[in-house]
Each structure stands twice: as structure tokens, then as C-alpha cells.
Length: 123
Length: 123
DNA sequence: TCCTAAATCAGTAACGATTACTGATTTTAT
DNA sequence: ATAAAATCAGTAATCGTTACTGATTTAGGA
Image 1 (cartoon, each protein chain N blue to C red):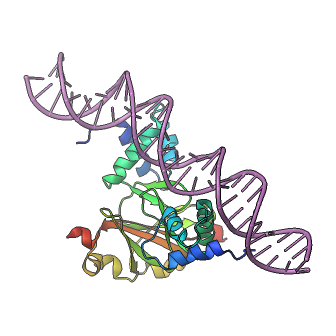
Image 2 (cartoon, protein in one colour; image 1 turned 120 degrees about the horizontal axis):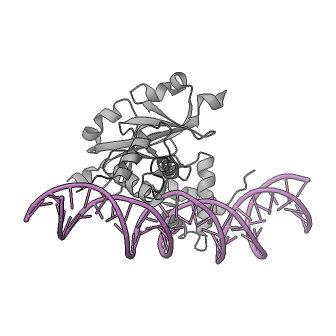
Image 3 (cartoon, each protein chain N blue to C red; image 1 turned 90 degrees about the vertical axis):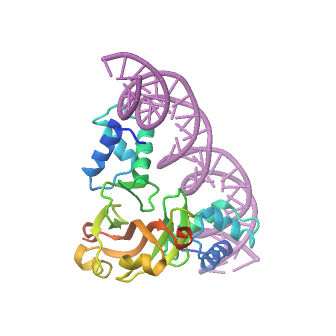
């Protein structure tokens, strides 16, 4: 039973209008432009709710902060170890083989996590 | 200029002998069996060093803890939202399409991060 | 519209995984 | 053997995140 909330709406809008995969703190700064007295705790709580409902994705790239993605479709994230940028790439069977050519991105390593329910828990 | 250290060796051995993708605290508990007075800080510092040198992988599944993988080859991780297990799966072009059949795993979502250096930073 | 219960909020305190610091110990190369 | 650099154990500090509080907003029935 989830009620409407202006704050959650604004947070979702920030994510839909951004391609930079902001952190919770960055979402907070951005959403403050629309709702100046919003609380950082509110941002965290709603980001968690939106991740749980599948409306957004949480992306951990190992820089100590969670990043959030308003695009919840299945795609890869290219994370640059120098500038820290996170770039979306659609997934197809050639993607992994052809990253250097198609994206000018030199892949060094990758961590992919597929979320779901395992065989044992499906029984 | 990296020196040998018995502690780092033992940590690496724990990861190579494990398929369960332990957290830092779990590595600490395991490595204490061999080096009882090892410090948790030492475990964290060496895990960071090993990740930086590419000898191990850090896998964030969104449960609040970093998990570590002694297998640094490119593969997927299946994370069960019920039991929290993390399972390795080799990557091939059919993998994403056939997860449910081949692994009995029902994929709900996925976050894949490819680490590397982007086009701009390669200039 | 009015009213009540549930949901959400802002603000703040607490938590806990991780990092930084200290002086002692180990490693490596001379 | 010795000295500089690396690493260590132990502990304190950091900081992203979560939990708690009493106040406010939402939703649905009277």
C-alpha cells in the first residue's frame, strides 16, 4: 500500500532526466532545487523503495558510493577508472567482444550481477 | 614496490579455496584459523591491494557488504534475493537468454559493470 | 466535505562497514 | 649484519547509510 508523495515523484524525475548515474547525495542536491527543505533521509528512503519496486537500479562501481539509474532496462555500465564516469551500453551478444571498437572503451575487468531467485529457493 | 607478506598470502589462499564470495569479515574469520592474531584492518588493506592489482574481484550485490572473488576471470554472478547466495556463471552469447533453463535461475534484473578506461581518458 | 488510519515527512541521532593512524615488526636489498 | 621501506596489530576516526521521533500529508469511507 504505497501512497503518493511529491518527494518521491521529484526524486524519480531527477533520475529520469539524468544520464550520469548520480549518488544519493547528488540526487539530494538536485532535488533540493525543486523541494528546498527535503531531507537527505527522505532521499535515501525513497531510493530504497524505488529500487525494491524495480523502478530504478542501484549500481555499485566500487567507489564507495551507490549510484542510481532511472533506466531499469537491462544494460551494461562502462565505468572509467580514471574519470569515474558511468556510461550505458545496450546488451547484445556481440557487446562483450566488441567493446573496444564500438565504444572506444578498453575493458580491463567486469563485475556483472544478475538478480533473481536461485534453483534451491524456487523449489 | 610490494613486499611479500604471510598475511596477504593467507588471504589470497582463502579466496582461492572458496566459491562463496565471502565478505571482508568472513575472510577475516577464515584467515584467523591460520593466523589467529591477524587484524581486521590488515584483511581490509590487503583485499584493497589485491583488488587494485587485479588479482581478485570485488563484487557488490547491494546487501551492504562487499564480497570478494578469487577468480578474476570474466564471468557473471547470479545473486539470489532470497538466500543471498552468489553463484558464478561463465559468459557466452547465449547466457543471458538461457539463464532460466541452464541454471534454474529466474533473472529479475541485472547490474553489470565493465571496468576500464573510457574514450575521453584514452586520448 | 469531514474524519481517521496509514503513509510519509524533516530533522537528527545512531549504526556499522571501512579507512586512517600509531608505534612495533618483518621484509628486502645492500 | 644493517638500514630503509613495507607491513603489521590494535585502535580511533570517518562517513555513507539507517533508524528513530513527533509532525504532516495522503487516501478512502462516512
